[in-house]
Each structure stands twice: as C-alpha cells, then as structure tokens.
Image (cartoon, rainbow, N blue to C red; front, side):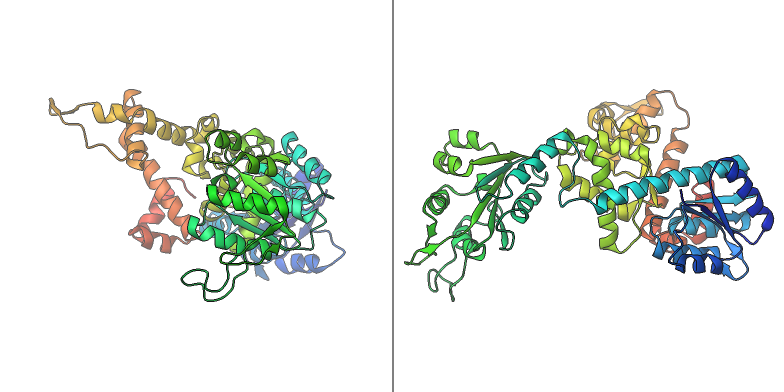
Length: 503
C-alpha cells in the first residue's frame, strides 16, 4: 500500500499522527509545507500517496491551494483537511471543492485514525474501480445474462448474418449493435443508425432508400438514403416494430434480393449492407395483430439477442454507476464524485424502469446536484428515494415515506375535515398528484397521526435544509451567491447553516 502523506508545519501533529498510524500498520510520509509535497509529486519515481492529510495554514503555502493543485494531478486522491475552529468556513469550502473530509483541531486521535482508514478504503476501492473501467469494453456487465450477450457477440464476430436485438427501452440495444459491427468483417465500413419510430411515415421511405431529383415537391437534388450511406458496413434499424406496414414490404425485398430503388428512381441500386434490427416490442404478438409482416419477421429473426433489463442484472449497477459518474465528470469538466456503499445499496434496490439510460441520467444529475464529493443516500434523486426498498437505509426513510404517502395517503389528507375553533371546516384544496405539496401533506399527516407535537419545527427544519443544500449545490458552495438566489441575506444563510448543523 502507498503511504499516507501528512503535511503540517507543527512537528507535534506530525509525530502524533505518524505514531498512531504506525500502530495501525499504515505507512506514512511527512512534509512541513505544500512546496515539498508538490516537488514529491513532480518526481516521476515517486508513486504518490494513498491519502493526503494537510493543514490549512502553513508557512510557504495554503492547504487549500495545495488541495486545488493536487486534485488537478490526482483527481481520485482522498484529501483530508486539518483545521482550527477559526478556519471552519474555509474547511467547509474545501469540502465543497473536493476534499474527502475535514478534521477540526484539536482532534480526537482514535477518530482521526478512523477517518484516515476510511479514506484509505475509499482510495483502494476507487483504484480497483478505475482499473476495471480502464480495461472495460464498450459494453459493461458482469452479470451472467450479460456474459451470454458477450459470448454471442464473440460467436458472431466472423459473420454477416442478420441479427434481431430485443430488450426494453434504455437497455443498450444500440451499444450491442455497434459492438456487433466493431467485431465483424465489416468493421472498417460505416455504421449507420436510424430510429424508424422517430421519423414521420412520409419521410421514412426517403430516409431509408434516398430519392431522385424531382421525385416529390422539395426534392431539388438526388439524395442517398441510409442503405447507400451504410454501403460495405452495417445499417442499424432501431424500433423496427414501429415501421409502417407498406415500408416493411420494401425492406423485405431489400433483404431478399439485395436491391432497392430510390424514391422516384427506375434503376436498381445494389445494397451491400448488413442489417441489424432492434425493438422493445413483442414482434410475435405484432405479427398476430396483423401490424407486422410474418415473412419480414422470419427474415430478421435469423439470430436473436435478448438484452436483460437492468433490474435483472443488479450486480452491474455499482460498476455502471462509477463509470457514468466518471463519464459525467469528464463531460462537465469537474472532478468525479465518489458514491458511498449505502447509496449504492439503495441504487441496487431500485427497479430502473428506464434501464441503463435512466442510471446514466441519474449519475449526471448527481454530478451536478450532490453537494459534496462523496454521494450519500440523502443525495439520491426523489424517484430513487421514493421507491420501495429505499427505506432500508436510515437516512432514506423520511424521503421514502413522504413519497410513498404521497401516492397512498394523499386521498386521506384531502378527505379529512379540518377543525377550526371547534367547527368542521373544508379540507384544503387538493395538491396536484405527485407534487411536493402532496408529499408534504402526506408527511405531515404521518407525523400528526403518530402523535408528534413538534411537526411544525420538524418539517420547517427539513424544508430549510433542502432549500439551502440545493442552493449551495447550484453555486458550488458559494454562500453569498446562494443567499442571493434564495432571496435572503448573507447573515441569514450563515445563521441557518449553523442552526441546521449543515457545516
């Protein structure tokens, strides 16, 4: 294991931490100022630290400046900032800016060692994840169902046979089609994709087969269709189950004899194209309903690959989550965020009706909205926290209950009369289904019926906490800007942060 680097101009602090970590069999290396650390990092022969523990105020440089420079070189390195109480605001800013955690001085030694050990475990876990991702193929998956897909891609690597990919929306059908193309004899040719459900019926024929000049109003020039664009390569027809019936006949003819005509054309064009089709629909049922040609179905259904839904391969959620978090961070040019084991457990229990695409969107949301570098259960989006199973985590119980009550108990809230001065009054007007007001009323009902007498304080605290955390996330921890966006004063937001223990 690589050593823990300790940076502090106070010899006694370095000595105490070195001895405590040595007793835990954790190697250390000490520095007196940030310049020494940067020089060591610049040394190519130096393997670098496992964790960096740095003071804020030191002669010859600031710990916060060191944090910024180190993070540019080693984005995944956990950095713990040591700070006196007077530096607490700076420490919180560091925490928002990428620090793993901050350690107030004077610190309790066993707690400091426990924090450093947690950072070491996080660092080692991220190293393993990075190794897996760097060696990962274009499709990620360790579940047995995905291994079957990978084996099928391998068996088809020397074939030009037509393939039909089935699976729910968002399960990655186009990724599989691209992998089939990449590992086929046509890999050097183009890969052309078209979603047959996304193009209007009157334009789809021209999109697929092209048109001659003057074939219809607006056809000023001859245009090559997707079949010609994919010459020598692969044409991917997504959502083939939604293709209009009359166009199915034309597609069948191309697959049968390898020729087609442009719209308005009289000369046959040879199609040297491998066709891969995909659908989320049950084509057999579509054939029975008479909306999909049976002969075309059998022509497409030479080899069928079924992609499992993400809920059928939950063991892949951690790997995919870390991959998408890194991908999102790269797109937004920010440091990749880490995710706690508890948050991963909640994600793994989620059913993901939108499959892999939904998980990718959630990771993008977390990259933008999670207030700290480490994503906890409370940072997960409402649709995850409100799902059955999310309540297994203690920090997710309240949001999950609010969402659940919003759907099951909202009618009770709106149906109950309200007592005003001993008289029955009308119930409040119903809130829109699925709205936050409905969830608030449901949660209030749950607390009131449980006999709580601090409902006002409890819900006000939660409301103010959510508002401030969201505003700070939007402003990347800048309090003054967050206060301006919320329409409150700088002193007010500072006082609220202290009252709500958001430091």
